[in-house]
Length: 209
Image (cartoon, rainbow, N blue to C red):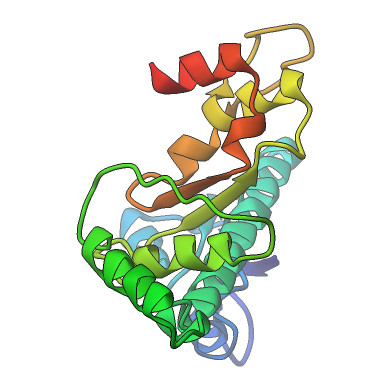
């Protein structure tokens, strides 16, 4: 995170913001000034500044702004990583097979890629179920959105519900903040519930509901 004054010799903060956005757009910039105006604030945001703070300010205000800027940067980096994953072409090209049985799998994947229904993929361990699960996502209209995978067998049963559905602050003892669930995170994308058969029956009922 860069904290930068607007009034500086040689180059002002607005021009600095423009140049840094060209070189390192993922770095959030917080501009600080004693000469605040709506026009300057709008100009700063148009140039890519994350926030605009007018002097005099409180350290707590700066602290909150820095924390939010760091969270914003993490989201950008996560998004970039996901898009890089998409560019790896997780599609039928990653599933290799020439047999009649595999041709049937390929044809089925192509058909379900355009559907919005839930899809159940079964098969023995190591047969490539996750590869097959990714293929419809990256052939569908959702391919620009997130693909979320969660292993239902690897998460303790008392934590899995919170992972899937999230929770709000104060919902239970120890819930100091709010957390979005995997379903909300996968909105407009695809969620893969790996090993769904290992999920507790009571949670399966909630999932169905």
